[in-house]
Image (cartoon, rainbow, N blue to C red):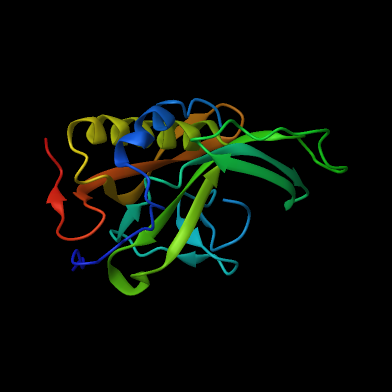
Length: 198
């Protein structure tokens, strides 16, 4: 059962909730490095951490509305060679030449931070960042829904989501999985939850 009586779910540094709507709508491309990483593996399973611990199906995750970031990442043979990220309230960071050994150069990346609100991982904070087309689309949709919600109700700016997946068949690569973020309720910065409006 989800514990919705949590005080100060996320620190918002005193920012007015209304200040995030324009920035959320500007997430059209895609926190510094560090922390526990959440990702969806190639088989469509959600995992987190260095040991790729499975996320328990159906657990609920609160999205920090002030944590959306955009920027760039450079990968080399499965290792991050460089990452430059900034809050969506600021312009994307400036970058120079890609680090030596970067297989695709600098890639657009967007991300967000979440906190588990139910199950055995309750209280765990993670960050999800993505460079994939499907991942960026899912985060863009989440950001747009959040912006729409905040414009009509600034008292509950925290979406609570269940992590899901969908897939499509690619001619060359076979089945490709993409993230799905299903919003199940909205939370205020503190206090009781409100069910999602239809």
